[in-house]
Image 1 (cartoon, rainbow, N blue to C red):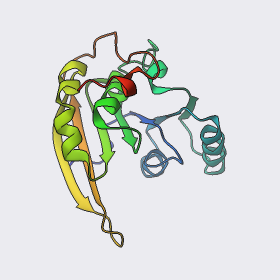
Image 2: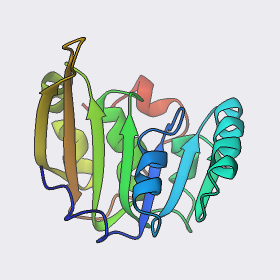
Image 3: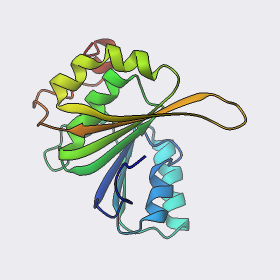
Length: 178
């Protein structure tokens, strides 16, 4: 899989719904030049990640306690990242609305999904069209030991996201673009 040559081509990354910091913290460790922004709606996670970033002495890491829907509306943030990642946050039609407004044109969104990915992609076609994304590649694999299915979906940002997206908090989940 060739997501980027080796992440040296990108300068900025945002991880939406970062949980315990995967994949953003390992990527930051491997590519210290990256400016990494981590967004999570739970203060408890941000507190943990603040401690982790301090203990690891990582520079250029910004931690934000915010919802994706409000974070993506901020003019200084909107469409500013080379790469946005999300893992185990929501189905793809909802994830697109959370993440594509953050990706700059010609940037990429990397979604890490489980076994339901093929069905989610089919149901989420409208969200790609509306929000400016296009699926570039899909990698399918099985985790060792537990043998569960996983997908990595790489999405190119081909056009600007309309300003009305993301919609107000809660709306993308209740009324997904499907």
